[in-house]
Length: 318
Image (tube, rainbow, N blue to C red; front, side, top):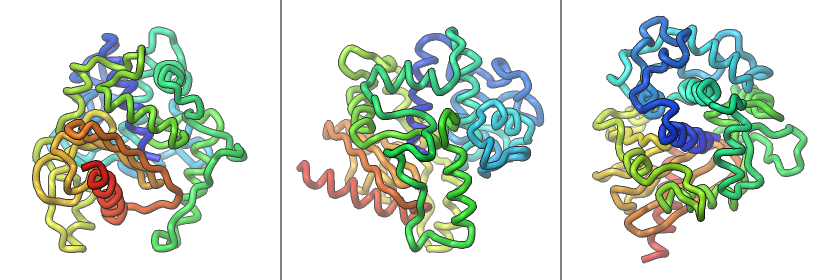
């Protein structure tokens, strides 16, 4: 699911390298209709690192499960909604909206006038040899794993969530934040590209300079507001969000729960989704890890599992 954000972020960084826009380009300069309701100063970088305050639910006004994957319609709805706080002052994980805006930006600025699905295929998946990867996949495709939840995560809202994600990720639907499908081998190709600082063989996804800059902490000491209530309920100390610009996070310094694991190097960077998916690179150990499974595990439970998986991977290599 949300590993899709890493794919979309990589495409955004590639477009920056190509001069289509910059980190600090205001979204309203590209999409004028976005610049209403105090959104006129929102930048590309703030969309990437979850510091904008865009709509944080799944279905904004006018959007249903059936048109969830219509990028133009989804963007238009998000653009009409006020933001929750002054951009850059808070950090709250955003599941769909911010990356839908980034997807629309990629389409509008594309010199070849391609749709998002084609951009991802021609600029990311095909060049990296990710031949079984795409955004959106037919519901009856033989290789599609059905949306499901673990028994502990199943509740009264589970059927509606599964319906939404099943219908929203079909065929040519485009959800830059969540509708990518791939195999473990394809994800490993992406991980190898990030381990090599944005290159895979002869194909340079992005410059090393931009890659190195993107894989740092871009939210400072801000905490992830989306996790604060669960941490307080479980008496877990708060910690920095540590968002990178590559659709995920960095390990950072300190002893606290992180998807990269407690013993990963501070420079380690990673992405994950509740679906449940994860990739991680520890540059100090020259190690890449990728993980795909079925069954939603959300919140801190998922982070604990990923921390254990990456801890075992790191321990096995010493």
